[in-house]
Amino acid sequence: MRTKIAGIGHYVPEKVVTNEDLTQYMDTSNEWIIERTGIEERRYAAKHKETTSTLGAKAARIAIKNAGIEPEDVDFIIFATLSPDYYFPGCGVLLQRELGITHREAAALDIRNQCSGFIYGLSIADQFIKSGMYKNILLVGAEMHSMGLDFSTEGRNVTVIFGDGAGAVILQPTEDDNQGILTTCLHSDGTHAEELAMINPGSHSGYHLGTEKYGYPDPSTPGGTFVTQKMIDDNLMAPNMSGQLVFKTAVVKFPAVIKEALENTGLETTDIDLLVPHQANLRISQFVQRALKLPDEKVVNNIQKYGNTTAASIPIALSEAWHDGRIQTGDLVCLAAFGSGFTWGSALVRW
Ligand code: COA
Image (tube, rainbow, N blue to C red; front, side, top):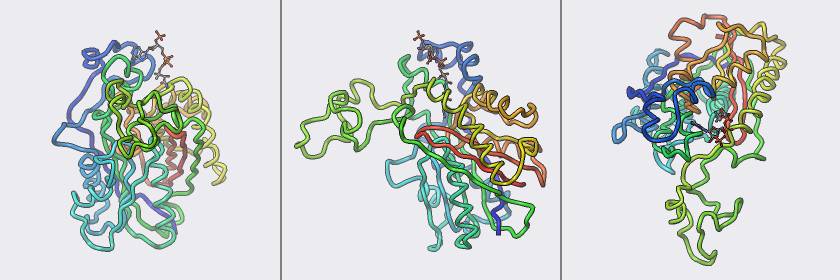
């Protein structure tokens, strides 16, 4: 028994935000952003009208239709995001409600593996399908970053990179030996957890990084440590990133985890028909392409249009490539991601 991708879809919000648009809020330039990241524009969701789960639902409807099933056929939902609608419950149940998947056997799982969320979700789905537990798994990666970014110059190194969007796949069992997920490789290392992170609000109350910076009260004070006034006053509730550390680590881990997947399956880099890397930064993807000696036509890059959409980036790029006719039956598609945690992973899929 193997797991196949039976349906695929993506959705990006209508609003286009160019690099030039960002110069209204922060000291940056189109040239700086393009040179360092390759990004030309990104999409932002419509506030009050769209949320992470509604973006996910739009992508999911396309994937469900593409698979030739109905929403009520979905028996398991996996939702990957770092920008959920609510702190809890997770987006999985909100998507379930949005799609009207109301039968009692359905279940929803939320995963928080940031840029690697889609690969982790794919691996989880693969195990559930192979064990025979579920027959139609809906895996969604969606992000609404625009709601949590710091638009001042202080936040520019992070803010210019990220965009909103969603992608989804339907996963089903297949007995065809020549099709489906061949392997998934997952890794993590929490040593640098805070180097690409949104630390507040949270339950840490200064445990990892000291109490003073965040203005935590005396520990005997009951409650009141989730959000402190100092966090708000000092603008400490936005994501932070050590760009150079992320870059240096990513360009090592990406090729290594792709090679691991190839070794697991006895395949070579020359067997890859299409590499769909997480769209972290065009420079990272170009580095990986060179390390694997892949020609341009074998690597998907759409970060120029959408920025880095974290858990949504692989399913958006995969869906776009499929809808553009870049993936044919029998092709070997390689997916790979690296991001916050650090977490990273890869998957090989025979289409
Ligand atoms: N516009 C203009 N200048 C900016 C800027 C922006 N958006 N962001 C940062 N800068 C400035 C910095 O303040 C710094 O100025 P200084 O020299 O006066 O102090 C200068 O540019 C260089 O900053 P640095 O952070 O060293 O730049 P960099 O060359 O490392 O590029 C990144 C920054 C973020 C583009 C780069 O590190 C990167 O792409 N890292 C990987 C990030 C990534 O992929 N994240 C997602 C992982 S999933």
